[in-house]
Length: 155
Ligand code: MG
Image (cartoon, rainbow, N blue to C red; front, side, top):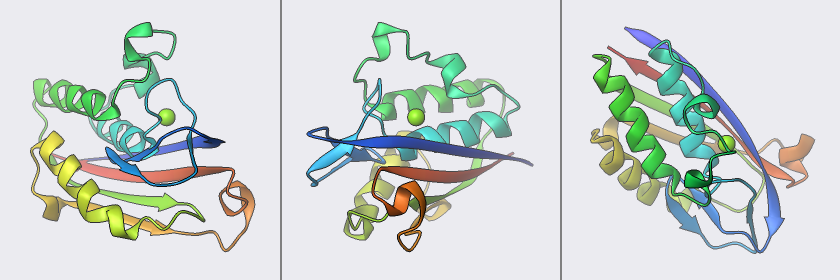
């Protein structure tokens, strides 16, 4: 059994798409990033890579690489699954905590679970997605960005 943690933050910008767990969320601002800035997918990838004893996503998918410009992070997540499977690891479960003040994401969580479950070929019952605010405190509370913490268990 191997556990790994992931953490990521992206900054909000008006007019960008907001994509979390592969699901586009209706909001007047989205996250800035080289890829689609799917902060949830990024934190999960780092948790998976860490559990496998590997380096972070910046090493595998550098933001200097034009191939990853505006790419769906689910494609990168699929690639990470392949990397860990090739090393003999299978995912037992993943849990994540989205930290944001707005928008309300709970109506979108079932769709995120479906996308992540399909991408990882993993039973949705093995994927946790939760959300919390910081009661208005800090950069998440000021709605400047979204942070995500993830943990993954591999065998
Ligand atoms: Mg990121």
